[in-house]
Image: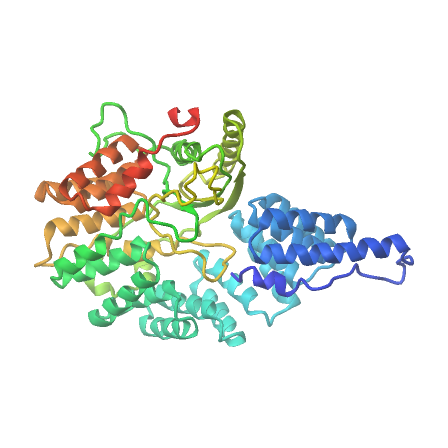
Length: 561
């Protein structure tokens, strides 16, 4: 879906609609309208800079000053959306539609409904938007996305084609059309569209990865390797890109090259040049029973989605934020059906359509979830404890909305404000490190709703047997990486244990064990694994930085929970 610029492009000077029955403006009315325009402009600048809380202050004032201006409500709704207040955003968009229905209003409402997983209402809103303006490519694309989620692939394909016809210079529409072709098994047409997307945006890493997958499937390994290497260069913290590249290198017998690629997968604490702190991705795991040995798969059943594991990770990491430091916590939620991996049959040709027909079932609904952002101000121990409590309570309410048959994935990003030299004890350079995140690639296109389609790049090859000649223990490490990226801590840990059984000195397998423990919520087990990796290779930077974060002392009693 189109990003924030779409709203801002329409957010120029706006005035309340006048009708023949509108009374003449008073001097006070004109003052309030002028002030509202200033607030809307300031709010638009804040939105563009992603200062959403600041934008809320301006835009809430503008909406009060000009309550009959639909643009003010749409902009206020936008600010609410990006701060995670989706229900309030929906209220504002509905109010805007009452005052002046248009394509933009219906589009925004549909986006909120899609975010909430209300696909039928979202489709109705998008179709209504298309009635107002059938020439908007983003509306056609959104309709296609919903149709695709309902299993209506041909209808979706036609919508994506229409979007490209309307705006063939937008890389996102080319990408969506290419993916529709790929899901229908029309690989060459898919590759053509993905190449066009990359031509329009050379840094389009998602398109580069998908094209690499198609090239590999077509037997063009050299072209595939080049694309996967480019994907890794563009997004060094992407475990998916490294997984596909390392797997391809191992298959061709290039063990040393594959090992080099894998070294960048388990970066629990890579330096963040942007001044922020990205925390571990949690998948609903909880600590194993006391009887379970650290670093080994637990026989205990997986916890229910959102049963507390993700919140435990949030709590522990927020508790480590120094009391004299402000921070902003961003949370990305995805409620998705648990991946069902099926071994690849060579004569299927990679056609999802044929696979679905053979299975006799329709595709599942797309993932739902969303984005939330929380301010964590500096303060006393009691104030910090209360602030953490408010964050956890709000997240509990959100996680409770997860579908009963869904698996919850929680991606967290914690950004610290710059500390003064005095606050840092004279060392202003003392910045924190980050924890493991399987796909830390940002949001280059400013998408309003980000899906988990990248998981297909793992699922489509994960169950394939190791090629003859491939290093067996290193192949197990790669398999473990794949399951780690999918959030399956138990199966990932089992793969890393197989690797260690074959090569007890594998530092990469110990790093993998540590990641599996982090996903499960077993920090003690992760610490032991990283210490073992360091004992094997004292120069292992990933293990050293991982321990630095894992051993960081908490500043509140929350860490003891």
